Image (cartoon, rainbow over all chains, first blue to last red; front, side, top):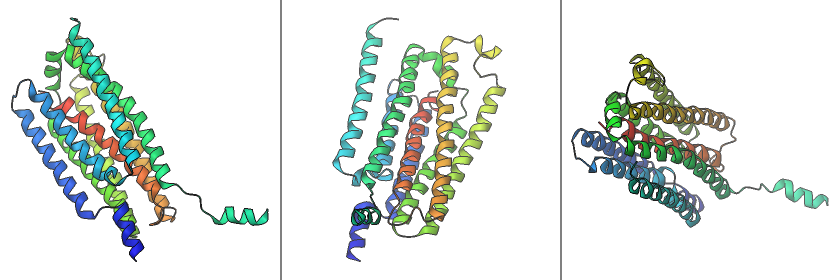
Length: 100
Length: 207
């Protein structure tokens, strides 16, 4: 019995956390749609990307269990995201400096 | 020799963490596939800023929002189906898996109506209406069909994978002690969800 509890603690979350994350995701979706209606000028895209990133963080950590995975998984995901950001930064360093 | 063989057959070799790592590595390749498309999108949007805004006015925000809610909910149901399996609730897990597939199907039905409407408005690559528009608008719709189309294919694949998981659950191949297949299917479904989380604001909410 003890072993079983330990197993559940290590491997899984309660049902309620999934429900809470789902509510959070729906709230953030409502915020993105509402904010898109307001003209915020240059920060409109930034707001949308930030909200999408928060939503992805919730999905990665809770739904995809990264929170309870070993450190290697977290390092791998961070490395993957790091190189995406690097590519994007270099891409725009190029495009914003050359006037096409 | 015979004793050695006995030990080999009686010992079940399993590495769940390794299996999940394998799935994550596959997901990184998916990230490269979609990442490249997001790069193309961002460069063209940067170069044709105004055209993208004009073209995005044709998007159906209502269907886009509905599909976002559907996909987020389906991510929740597949996550809970794993939690149910961990707790030995086979029927609950099976029900949640089937609900996930149904949500995926509703998503595709919405997509069908959305695409049909867009094509009806003449917003498809090479259409007589679109070729007369600015380059940015043509690019927007090209990217829209390729990116949401590829995402739609992933939804179909995810549904097929989860249907297999339902069969495995019924046949007790997936059990409360061995459910890494279900976890891998879940990871795939969540990745499809994350891609949509970014597609939605980039295509539907830039007016």
